[in-house]
Length: 287
Figure 1 (cartoon, rainbow, N blue to C red):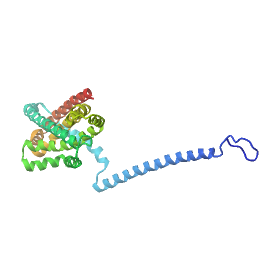
Figure 2: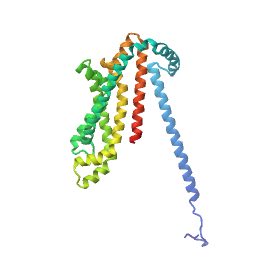
Figure 3: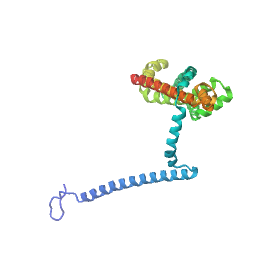
Figure 4: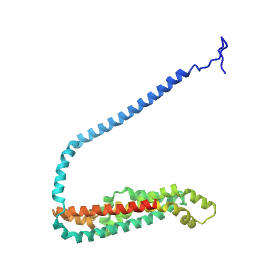
């Protein structure tokens, strides 16, 4: 309790309260001003980078708006399927089915390999640090090489065959899924693994009864996502390796049979949409 020294009366209000309010108001104004300055600097930097890139390449946004109508008109005129394209429908479906099967088989084998690699490379279930570092390095190497580079390298090794596309999808998918599976195990199975290990449960029993029940739905979700991606990417691999639906599209396109090439694009798009619908349905059931 404070009293005035001279008259002995109670001082009911602190002397620094107005200054504290002024100081708080000054801090809030300074915070919003600094935030606005940072936002302005970021936007100005993006504008400067865009202007520099446009002047260096000779490309402007006006080219996009002027080129879109012409491109759409040419695409509708040439790539729109006609009744004559129905004659190649059996060949397209047979080749597409073959490509989808290869993509699914490569993805499934990659998911199985990634599961065992994730068990050994995870901080939760992995044992030795050198093994974890080796698995992290190999998976990083696999996923950081672009898919076209994998296709070209394997084309030189295996020639024009389905093996080149299969292994290109396998290596890239293994790198991505290994990293994702390791994160899933560390984030969702750590407490279960620790509890069962403290109770003296054997390692395999912990994996089957502690790790898998917590992580299997997420593993399946990542597997379905990888299948969707690889079915789309299989067309690009076919163009590069000369196999599958990509090779057939490239053949029709270079032969100026644009209606057949457009028919392949439509069928491939419908196939990817069907796979996406099925995988989303399965994910909703599991998650």
